[in-house]
Length: 231
View 1 (cartoon, one colour):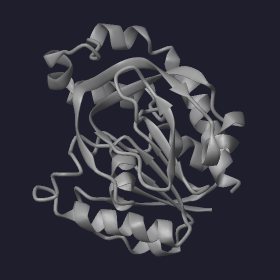
View 2 (tube, one colour):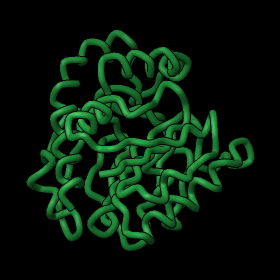
View 3 (cartoon, helix red, strand yellow):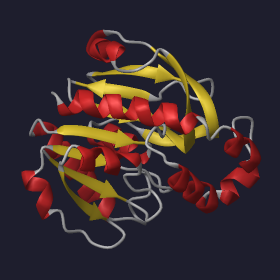
View 4 (spheres, one colour):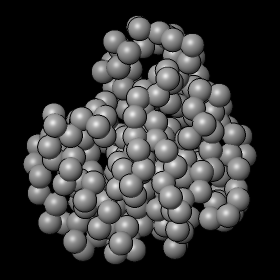
């Protein structure tokens, strides 16, 4: 299988997804928008994965490549490719499907529980994902659920945490993909937002206290990847 991924900043790459892809001997190509706008490899890809980043979908004046990226995501969906978006990636999918993306009422940073429901298009995910689990969040924006999509996850801070569109387009606003190394990078580059605090912002010490949750999140991420790979 050929996976192509979009990366927006050096410190938010594939993380544990890279190990999964390697273990299954999948071909992996990428567009790192901060380095190049070359997307030629996407044409032959079976699966597009869109990673996170600190920018907002509404900041296309500052990041003009994002307009191209959204159009390419829309095209990938129309071509029936598998599409998975994480954090900013989920917001970009929402935008590609015509939904609004905007600053949320408060940031959500740290380990917080999710409640998942599996209705409609999300029903097949009930055998893949747990109904409740703690995962890592680092976002200040949120999205409206796109028309034709089904929301299937919520947290206390944010009711729109995940959606599925059709059977092979999934947006996750949270970070199951993190490793100890990539979490450290996120803490380092997000130090300002962490220091600013908020009702749903954990400090660095609290975040580190829950690093044992990385193992469960990696296992859950792998189950989702296995599920999508089999589609």
